[in-house]
Image 1 (tube, rainbow, N blue to C red):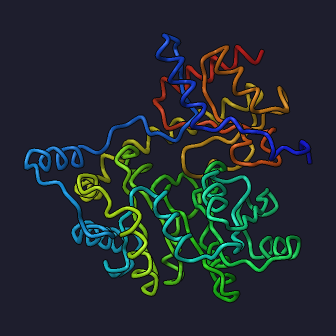
Image 2 (cartoon, helix red, strand yellow):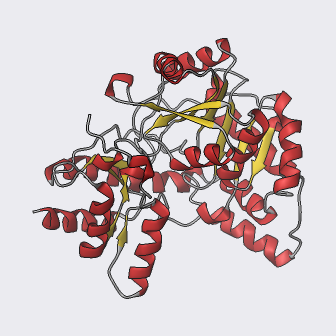
Length: 385
């Protein structure tokens, strides 16, 4: 497969760098359309906004317990009962300052310096960066059509042999960023069973739950009580800037994580917790938003291959198209910079997600409005000719 020597030494043009440059160009008067960041174009649910306004009017916003309010935990327990048929003890739920804080807390509580943790490649770059910053050994396991674009027990076995390590943790996202892969129930169970048999911590990133368009959306909690599940209000609930997420933990991890959370974060923001509690009852409104993403997805599935950008992985969930740009470039970073500079369309180079082969790919978010998505693709169509 195509690769570039010493590619990992190159400073990638990250999604947030693209966003910053796009913002700068927009402020200068350029008609920028951003498909770079997974930022829903819709506002937070009306119920969340109303609850936040009422709380602000009352004026009593302060610290909460380190792992969040009882009200939000109970609302989430009801969510799992209603959506997954599960009885989750609210005491196992930890509210976090976004899913990013959840990853920090779990990695710090589960692993020691030098422990090996497997993640998918391509995958969300923050996994790699946080694990590396904490002194953990990151084992990136290629996910391809042969593995149905997900981790498997066989691929994990091979990775351990090739790297000469014993895994201490496995992190899987379903739906996945950037590939859009939804790991089906049987495949997820095989992975959970393998981790249990090998005494490997299994971390399930479920922040794109609610945004599945094809396949089986299964929570790891349906398969095992030992999974550590991380979720967020950012994506399905359209609350990125509220920085609020949650985890469901095995009972034995609750107290250790609480102690770390007390030191690092004091507590999640109370205003965001109030809004999030209300957002859990807004499924009817949010499913209208989901339908708009589905329309964008259908358009891109048809139109992108027509303009020479075939989809490189399934678009089963989340709101990303991961496309092959090799017809036009073997340097997705340069391609992204040129596209933004010349036609004011921002997208993220694949090197952000895959340090080895991401020079061939690019991620495009379809979380924006349909008008913007159509306009962006038509600009690309003319440019690529």
